[in-house]
Amino acid sequence: MDGFIAIGAALAIAVSTIGPALGQGKAVVAALEAMARQPAESGNLRTTMILGLAFMESLTIYGLLIAFMLLGNMG
Image 1 (tube, rainbow, N blue to C red):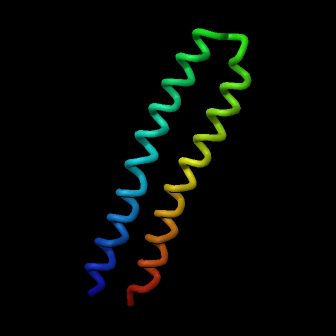
Image 2 (cartoon, rainbow, N blue to C red; image 1 turned 30 degrees about the horizontal axis):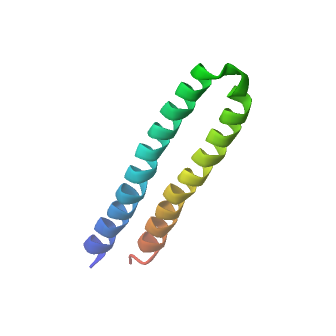
């Protein structure tokens, strides 16, 4: 049974990391393109981008939390 819990924890990390990683890549590319087109707005764009990246990263942290909870049930 412990093997299934370990696989579940690994899947929780993997699935919760793939989506935000792809989203963060797209967000950074879009923000850099916008900064290149409008350098005067780079401060506002950077702030908004960092806030969005933080929200995306929180999804990954939730996956890590679930993995730790699953691993805590082993044994």
